[in-house]
Length: 106
Image (cartoon, rainbow, N blue to C red; front, side, top):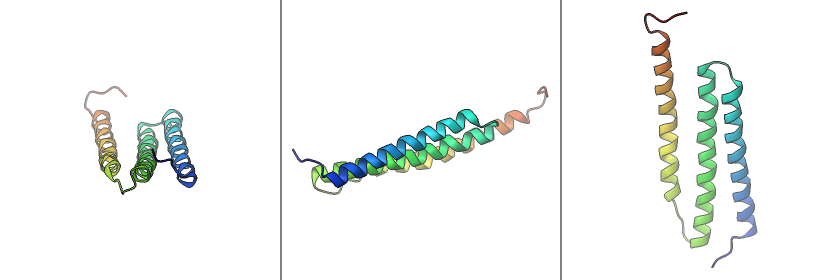
């Protein structure tokens, strides 16, 4: 079995730590921010950047261990990058329509 070179292990470790920190910061933003619109931005951005870092680290590991370029992880990353903002937009539109609904108290 092939061993991962030290430079690759350090790169993958840094990417995974970055992904965890960005996701944690996005989660804290969800807890700390006041309005729904503010709360939507932090986790969406954190999840997208976190998924990018995880996909990049998985690509590096798979490519080095199999000794050929592997890009399957990027298809997953592409779907996450495309669906995360779309989901956020749909949730924002739903919240706006709910707020403007007739007969609402306040």
